[in-house]
Amino acid sequence: MHIGMEAQLAPICDRVVPALRNHYGFNERPIRFCVTHQTADLEHGSRTLAVVERYTPDALRPRVIRAIREGTEKRWLYFDGVYVRHVLGYNLGNQAD
Image (cartoon, rainbow, N blue to C red):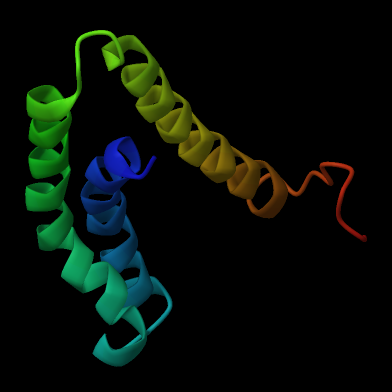
């Protein structure tokens, strides 16, 4: 589910956009996705969680919350893998050297 993940994107973009501009020299066109989502996903993230709260039947709520949590954790594991591979330089076993 993208509900938990969408709420994560705005703070991620808040850190990535300045690095792309200042460190890597990107202009606005290639980073417009991140710039747009810096603000849009703040609103979307809170709205989608409100929809879950309002419309999820009580019997399904634990499963829905678990799915949101798992999706959110998968995104963080993805970024952990990017960091381990590209910052620390470790081959995680599924990339060619």
